Amino acid sequence: MGKVHVLPDILAHKIAAGEVVERPASVVKELLENALDAAAERISVKAEQGGKRLISVRDDGLGMSGEDARLAFQHHATSKIERFEDLSHLSSLGFRGEALPSIASVSRLRLRTVERAAKAEIPLGTEIKTRGGSFESVNDVAWPSGTEVVVEDLFFNVPARRKFLKTTSTELNHVSRQIMHYALAYPQVEFQFHHEQRSILEATRAESLEDRVYQVMGDSFLENLVPVDYEKRGVRVSGFASLPHEQRSNSNSLYIFVNSRMVKDRILTHGVRLAYQDQMPSRAYPVAILFLHMDPVEVDVNVHPCKTEVRFAHPDTVHSALYHGIQEALLKQGSTLSHLARDISAEGLVQETSSSYNGGSNGKSSGYAFRRHDKNTRNFPEFHPAAQSAAVSSYPQDEAGQQFPVEVPANGHRHEHAIPETDYIDSVPVILGQFVESFIVSADRNGVMLVDQHVAHERILYDQALRQLESERPSPTQRLLIPLTQELNTQQKSVLETIFQELNGNGFEVEWFGDNTIAIKGVPAFASDCDARRLTQEILDSLVSVRVDLEQPESRVQRLREKIAISLSCRAAIKINTPLSSKKMQWLLDELFRCRNPFTCPHGRPIVLRVGIEEILRGFKRI
Image 1 (cartoon, helix red, strand yellow):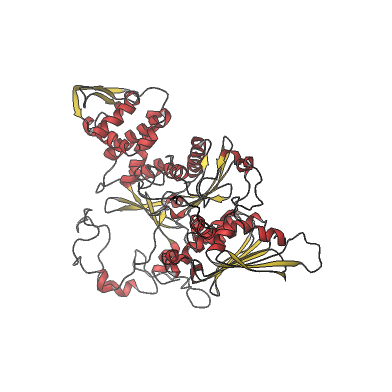
Image 2 (spheres, helix red, strand yellow):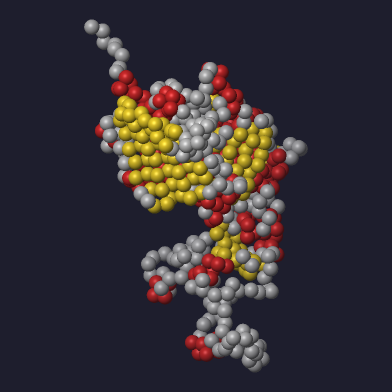
């Protein structure tokens, strides 16, 4: 007897289901796609135990006839395509004909549906019940409209799969994310989601993506997002991307849709992160809700059983459109210092007195790196208990010691919770001074801001160096009196072999001096004061991590120039503990606004922090 044999249908179907149905969220995804393909305008989802016990998806879409409903439970039965050529022109989310039979094979399932085109006065629908993929009953039923699919006891007949399901809260989180994805992609559709009688999402039909983001994510989520609208070579990019100071530790806040299909793709993720390179730390991720629209011929969605991965006919074009779209959106922002600022909460600013003034008894103070003023240079007066009576007097005194009245409302009560108003500060930031000789303190009507003088100057110098390197005239070279030799490791040598011509074309004069050694004979003129060896080593080391971006000549030149500018700006920027005059502080802020990206330093650190007026009032318990 031969060793090769055909698997029984029931076993084959369970194996096939494992490719499509990984967890309750997979079931929700497939059923939502079916509802959206059926032109539903309202979708209601219910779940119990995170979807492990029950999942119900009901829509008001086109529905199915009794004959189509029975066929839908057959493998590879679909209404989406008829010929192989149709795969290259897909406009639907589903097309495989695997979802419903795969779900049915590992659950107890009930389907109720009625075809929208039915002419009867009382539409007669179809009800089908299955158990483990086998039909239990097929009946006619009165059903108002659309389709409802109820899935119970997922993986009841596959214990090995069921034991790998996570806790209810974890599975609920995955289900919620799936519903949120499609709610974002289809703002014109109403979505409802209830978990065990508790409402999780109520999103009525929205007029715009911004309205839908507000419904799903909340108003605070939109505060640090900028609109993206860009088109290049048939690829249109729209949606929202975060300002550089809005960062996450993982990619969970990247929502990327291709022709309204939520996808996970390395090319797309790389394009988004590349747009923020040198604007945020290398391990940080931005927040983005982006939609790519292109001819279906240009994208292959028949790559993964779950249809979450795609291939592009021209990946470089897609990558470039995404990168330039985000960069263009970011460059349009930053008109005011307040807009550049990263908000910080006043939570924790007000603490118990006993813990606030402990004299640093818990070890090093948080500001130990900064030089403190002594008594002779302190700008603030001492507080004397004897002066307390004057300080709390209802009538402040002028310089002559005479009291002048304070205006009090007619009702005799001060407005304890009113937003403070003043004529001395307008919308243009006013420089108040310098804090610990390291941060510029500024204020406008929106709050108080701290500007890190080192990273602000670093951004300014970075832009200046980059402009010189990108100018039409070749960067002048400052030749060294005595050439310096430098030995390279394997990675540095590999990078230098790739960028050798570009390095010498941007102000450097470098020659090979043996197999693993180079002779440095010159550096860019504006870098003549730098350590040539250290500068060259930093540039090569920084390019080791971006080898993938060095494959194209244009990318090589851009990456090289950016790394040169980063190395120079960091070394030449004003350091902390450096006193600055008012004119110098004003110059820094003025020059900062002339930068192409005034949000962060080239390493991705924020430049401006702000405590808003509402946070200040909240800290003082006034609101």
